Length: 454
Image (tube, rainbow, N blue to C red; front, top):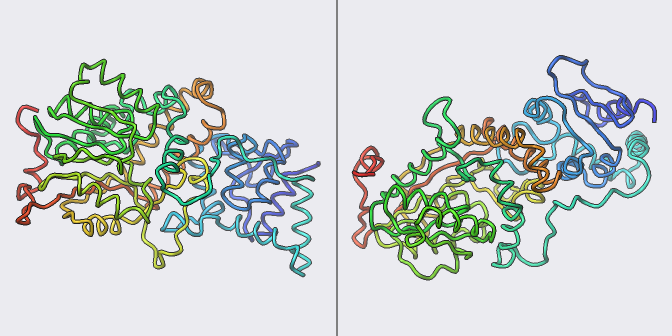
């Protein structure tokens, strides 16, 4: 097919009213779009099957399938490419991180796909051109990395276990290459400019411990404990005994090995257990770090109530959670199609105000909210750099498609944090004493101070 790139560029411009934002190289070697420039990223369409995927599933999910399958690639600066494509793949200024995410390309392709029932000759002509470019036949099946959903309601115990396994049970060695020695899969706390990722993660863990007021002899529950970094830090540096719960069998095995190596098995227990199944409270403090995004809006009040019931009066909760921007009409919120299909199945984001309100409805008193949005952008860029530095090894440890999923979602998420499409917040809440007291010092400086001997 001669000049596939030129034909594609002309089609996109006719359908959207806008020229291609980046230069494109098609499967036949042809190129189109803005003139070549040193350092400018290039979109490479390696196989015309990518167009069939987008025609049959317009918008973000069709593009994601082509990316995961390796049919679409980007040469050069991935961040610059995603920034340039932001207004075409999703709405650049969409504050909710959800509704409207298909952008002008998705809307145009949906119009083309519906043209069979329309009488507009120009639309039918564009559809014929798109089909001719894509080639005959149905689209290939989704890549193996796409989640296979079971029927039934979200956030049952069994469905949550499958969703967590999809994301986390992909090989501890793969995560070691991405996360680095800290094995912390949440936003770091960058206290020092130019500091290392490991230093920033240690700072984040200690910040949480200080907010929780952890000290010798206290009992900590870490909900969604990951690879055990939080409970290890709290036991090693603050003298607590700890229980960590996760639904990932691979995470649990890794955490138990770390704990045994450090001689802390008598003070830390790791369980493969849902937070709804924890029945041996009360605890003096609870940390929930990057876990509440998996709970779901319909279950969130029950989640908050469960944690409230597991705390002693005066006990503190530190809830570290990604948030989206609020919407005028919250019923219009839609989960990001790519994230839902490939990264965090059934995950949902809520505005921070909604989260605070639900925690307080469950009985908590919210005492502090700290936004760490810029910190997460730095963390994600560090993870992407780790992945790219170990790319060949990462592919060997998982699959090429899985590595491509992680690279795209982490780079796109870094930009989303930088542009304030999403944020992340630490909410410190307390279960009040029976007389209403919080047990907290009067000033933030006092309760953030490191305890003596730590």
